[in-house]
Length: 185
Image 1 (cartoon, rainbow, N blue to C red):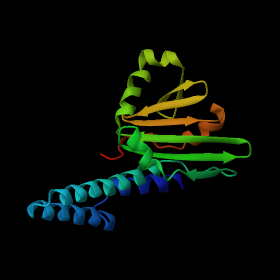
Image 2: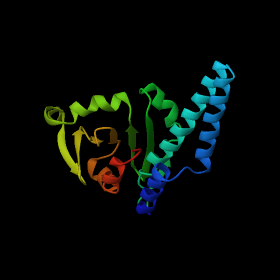
Image 3: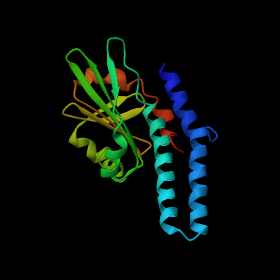
Image 4: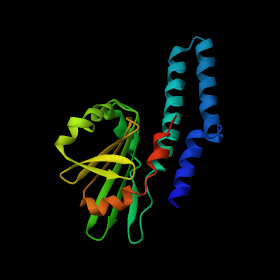
């Protein structure tokens, strides 16, 4: 099932333009027509809408990297991440909360935003002195009081918090970090 999610993410990000992308092209064409007609405000509005559509498509691709829930667990996807990303300097984000009995934790993914770049120094070399280094798959994470933070391809933040590391680790191990590194390129 996880491989299917990764394949879906790849298709969303790398496939030829689909019906959703046609709306993007139509919106860009409308912006061009408004610009050529001298209606600058309408051109700006159409371009802003085109950006929103592209961002939604990219967010859906990132969300596909959130592993499905293991047996006995539930997963709830946060659908309000787009609004939250504006407060974090743009980019795209995806978040899920996993729950089973008394255990509950969240996994946050953020890509291509200024705040993520700030984590790069913290997660390399000397910055790891702030926490214990933990390897999950091919990625290094910083364990700071049970909060795991990793940086994939120096641009995608992966953060898990809210439960003991041994509870969060199996779900994080399901993420295909190699495919994630190619996300959005």
